[in-house]
Image 1 (cartoon, rainbow, N blue to C red):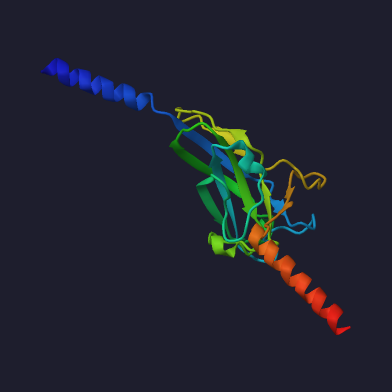
Image 2 (cartoon, one colour):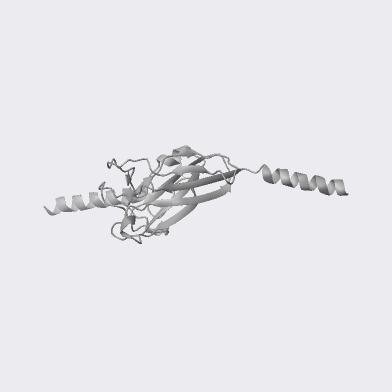
Length: 197
C-alpha cells in the first residue's frame, strides 16, 4: 500500500513539474503619444487601458479593431491594466512591470494600449479611436518562476529623440455592415441634394 501511495505522489509531483506555463513580465516604460506624435496619451488627465493578448492565429495581429471591443478574431485578454495619471510626469501612460503566469498554449503574445478616454470598459472603444499594438512574439513555455520572460511593448515608433516612446498609429474601424449603411446614407444624401438642385 505504501508503494502505491508513493507511486501516486511521485506521479502527481511529476505532473506538476511538467506542466506548461507562460511566465511573463510585460511593460511599456517609455510611454505612448497620441496620433499627433507629441501629446502624451493621458496628458489631458484621461484614463486609458493597456492589455496583454494571446492568440493562436498570427494573422489576428494584423486585423483592425471594431467598436465595442478590446479584441478581435480569436484573441484572448491575459491581463489588463488601467492607467490613471496621478502626477504630471505620467502623461505618457507608462506601463510599469506587470506579471502574468498562466497555462501555456502555442500561439502569439502582444500588447495593446488605447487613447485616453478608453477605460477597462470595451463599450468605450468607439469608431475613430486610436490605439497602439506592441510587437508580436511567440508564446514561450517557461516553468521557472524566478526567471520570467520579458516583453517590452515599446519599439520607439514615434521617433522622438532621446525617447523610445510609441505613437498610437491604428484606428478603430466600424464593422463592414456599418460602413455599408454609412455609404448608403451618403449616397441618399447626394441624390437628394442633386434632385433639389
